[in-house]
Image 1 (cartoon, rainbow, N blue to C red):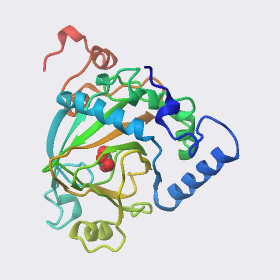
Image 2: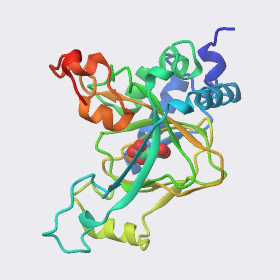
Image 3: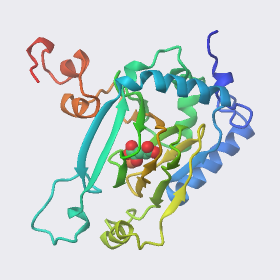
Image 4: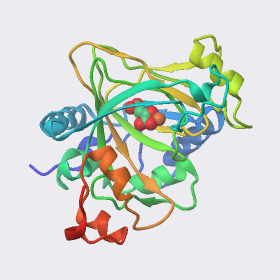
Length: 280
Ligand SMILES: O=C(O)CCC(=O)C(=O)O
Ligand SMILES: [Fe+2]
């Protein structure tokens, strides 16, 4: 049977497709949470049916995940030996995970049915109050699943994008809490507080336990954050929806290959490269 958005999203609690005071109240609450600490969670945005379908979709696409490993500081910048050794820019951590690229998710599957639900994009845009707001047009990256298991992890970092829109699908047995130091980078780099967070001595860190079905909006450029180490054999799955400030954008070939392990002809064409002339 074809999936319908109404079976997947709790439209009673979150009437994203119907203008009116109930939708307005949700948007106002999310805006207030974002203004306060750069993070808003819509608990149980999805129905139990959706969680089941998404878990199946993720399990069957999991073999197509692309693993990446690197060592990174919280800014994703290269080491600078001229800085003191204890400068936070010189502290590097292992990062590893797998991204399941967007072309593994069929238009009629649960993930894309949620993304394409009537009113979904406009609701997210209203919450974020972003004037320039377009779906990422990258067929490998418009909606992906971030997959991680024991031993993998997202150490402390600031995001390079303005915001992220994520859906929790499955948690590991233990660990995996989303920890963040709200807006510590709002008025400058604040290296002192960054150091305290990395040392585990900050009193600014909030711990957010996300459950399957929760939708999260997060301004990660200003709030240092990490996913606490995972334990147990069950994989953690999080879907990530991407929006950008220009229409019709796709990723650069080099970055796309780093994240997804391959590129498509459209990545090469947009970069002015001929597909048949491209050599790894
Ligand atoms: O998986 C998550 O919950 C967030 C990961 C993250 O911080 C990121 O992708 O930048
Ligand atoms: Fe992040």
